[in-house]
Length: 174
Length: 174
Image 1 (cartoon, chains in turn purple, blue):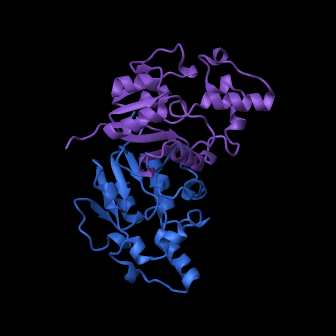
Image 2: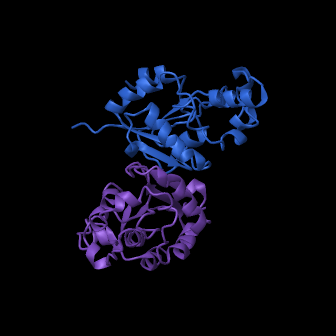
Image 3: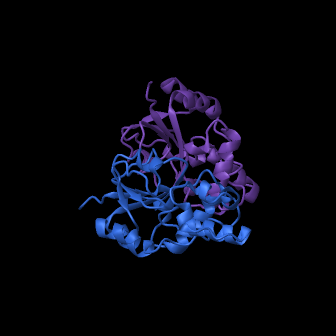
C-alpha cells in the first residue's frame, strides 16, 4: 500500500474567495466598489478598512464565495493525497462553527476528521502546504505553494512556489 | 536564545474533567449516580450510555469542570515550553465556540494563537504530547504522556509514559 502524501490546504483566500466577500460587504455597507487594482500589495485590512467590522458579523464566514475550480480540484486531490484543511480561525471565534458548515456545504467529500481550525499553523506537519500567507509557509518544512492573492501581489516568493489558482494546482499536483 | 520544546496538550479528559460533566448530566437527566468504579476500562459511550445526547446540548462543553491542578501547572509550563492546546472537537461543531470560551475563562494566559481544534491529531508536530487517548498518542513521534482516565484504566501503556494527573506532570516536566 502506498503511503499518501499529506497536503495542508488553507481556507481563506485559497478555498474561499474572501476578497469577493469583503468587496460585497464594503459595497453594501458604504456603497463603494473597491477594484482589485486598489487592493494589490496591501494587507486585507489596508485594502478593506472596515474589514474588522465585517468579520464579526453573523453570516460573514458562512456565505463566502468558493474560489473558482477549488471544488473539482480538491475532490480529485482528496483521492490521491491525505488532505487536511487547516484554517487560522481562532482570532474570530464566531467563525469556527460557520467555517465548519461552510466546508460541509461546499466540500461534502471532506470529512470532519480532515478539518483543523487553529490560531497558528507552526504545529502542522505535512508534505505540501497551499497557503496565501508567508507567515504560514515560512515555518513549513515541506513543499510550500504560495497561492496568489492581492495581498501577496508583487512580493518576493521567498523560495516558495507561486500558483495562480486551482487550475494551476491541479496541473502541478495531479 | 533557547528554543523551547513544544508541548501539545489535550482538552477533554486532560484539562477538562469530562467524566464529572457526564456524571452531572446523567444524574440530572436520569437520577442515576454513576460511580467511578463502574466506568473503569469502558469507553465513554459505554460508561455513559446517554453521552451522545448530552454532548450536543447547548452549554455542555462550556461548563465542564477543570481538572484538578491543571491551571497552576499549565501556567508554569506555558513559560518554560511552547504550549499548544489541541482538542478533537470537530465531531461536535457545537463544541467549537464553547471550547474557545472555556479556555478563555479558565486559562486566560493561553492565547488564541495557542489553540487548535481538529478532527484528528495526526498532523500535529511537537516534542511532547499529553493525551488520554491511544488513538492520538500512537501516531505521535515525540514523547507521549498517557493521562490516566477511566477509559484507559487497566490497559497496556503501549510504550507511552502513564501519568496520574497534573501534579505528576509538573514533577516530570518542571
